[in-house]
Image 1 (cartoon, helix red, strand yellow):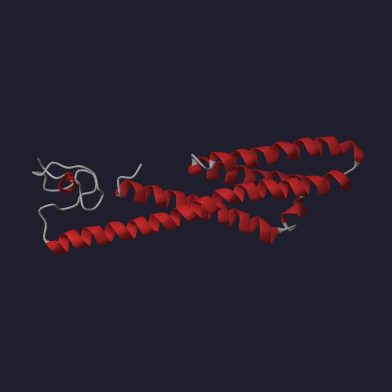
Image 2 (image 1 turned 90 degrees about the horizontal axis):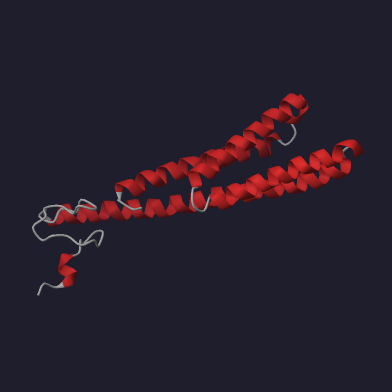
Length: 173
């Protein structure tokens, strides 16, 4: 009877047929030289470390959607108490919907981060454009925060795309 550990790939630990030249999952060279095998394992390890770092960036970017919801909630309270009485209810409803949308994107980010990040960025940019149309002076109010949020969401999207690319290279689902 064959030893179970001998039928697992040294790189990805998936079963293989002893007659295989390369691992069907990760491409490990079973018949390669020691240097080729070491090189393959080292490259895979580096990619796994990069993936770990990217996953932390993705999680952080998805959490930023919760931060945007919180900022909108605080802003809604401030606007509610400073707006004209006839506009308070309308502004409150709009802001509650926005807070709910960003919270939903934050939850969605746990399972579908690219969808959540692109949707969150799109909604945020649309809000800023609509505010610009309604009152052009709003573009300069909090411009540093607005730019920082947009840049952070774009970095999150890039991290998701890069993580997906590495997952495909490593055959990770």
